[in-house]
Structure formats: C-alpha cells, structure tokens
Image (cartoon, rainbow over all chains, first blue to last red; front, side):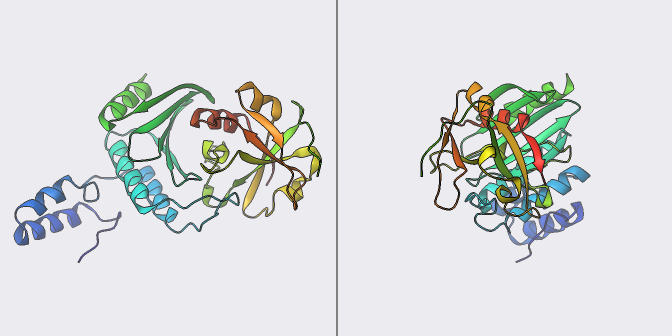
Length: 158
Length: 116
C-alpha cells in the first residue's frame, strides 16, 4: 500500500486517483475524491507548518506538560489536519496549533488584533473563542464546519 | 501540613511547556490550554509564589517557562484558589471551579512570564 504524506502534491493525488480508478473503479474512487487526506490543495506555508506540528503531536509522551497531560489520539490529530486544510482552502489566517491536557487540540487564527481559537474536543462540534486586542469577546459552539467557516470568514473580513 | 488562606494579591505560578513553541505562540502570548485542567482532577495545579521560588517552581528551565496570574484575577472570573500542600510541594495550590475554555483563555491572556 502506498502512503501519501502531507507533503505530497497534486501530482501524487492525480496518480493515486488514476491508480484507484483503474483498480477499484467504484466506491474507492468516491472515497478518495472526498477524503480530507487526499485533497489536492495547494497548501499555504502556514498550513504546512501547522500540519507538520500536528504530525509531531503523535510523538508527545504521556505527561508531556509535567501536569499529567495525555497525548492527542490519532483520530483527533487527523480531524485537526483536515480542518486546517479546509480553513487554508478559504485562506483564513492560520496561526497556531496546540495540544490540550485531555487529548484535545486547538487551532488558532489571527489577523491583526483579531483572533479565533477553535477547540476540537470530541466528535461533536467545535468551541470557538473570539478575541480582539487580547481580550476574549465572544464564545460559541458550532456543530457544523460550514457554518463555522462562514462566520469566520465574516469575522476576519470585517 | 496546615493550609493557608490565599489572598487576592497572591501570585500563582504555572509552568508552560515551551519546547517547539508548544504553548507559547509566535507573538509570545500563551495558549489557553496552558490553563486548562485535566478532566479527572479537582483543580488546576499552581504554586503559591510567596511559598516557593521561581527556580523550584519551574522544575526544568529548558523545558518550561514560568508564568504568573493573581488569585484576584482567578476570583474575578468566578473561580477560586485554595492551598493544597503536597508532601513534596508545600506551595501547591489548586484553581477550582468550572474552568471553561473561555475562563482558561482569560487566564492565559492575563498571565505574565516571570521566568524562562
């Protein structure tokens, strides 16, 4: 089996799509086209850095913060990577990622004095913390990525 | 070990992992996760500033920075700080109450680096 890494380009995606369509012409191709792993995006430099950092979260030992923190699980890391790609796809200003003490992950966006921290804690939804000038001004929970991204685009274009 | 009352002006110290910019962002601000507690714990561990030294509290200055918030700030966001001495750490205290992501963010936004 060929494993595609985050640094693979559109060429790799094209090759994989062709190979799968030749050998598995039905469901597998649908999966590949819809997979967040194989999205043929031209990633920004910021997104590449954050995805690399997310990959490094796999190497964290237990108690990496000295207060008993758990390491993020692979599923959460993959979910965060997929969201980073999606946010980057609409050119939202990616800034920072961090692992939490319970295995959760935060993705932070920042532009000027505006920032938004997206917290991925479990399967259900995202909590978003909006700050301006270093002060928290709003907290919200989103169940769907599309409405989240729509509001973030509005927030950062204001 | 006797427990002391923590005054509003008391400083509370928290270690922040700094390797690979883990909790310290490129703009030198602190991630809210530095003030988020583990789900199975009674509170967020800190050390009372006046009962320890920065050198002791930081444990390892290659791995961690040390930041400070006041008990008054903690109480202003409807949390509390209580002394919780441990056999090997007389200065240990807990920030108690429902530490939401928003409250963790507010603590991180007001924390000041004191070492590392």
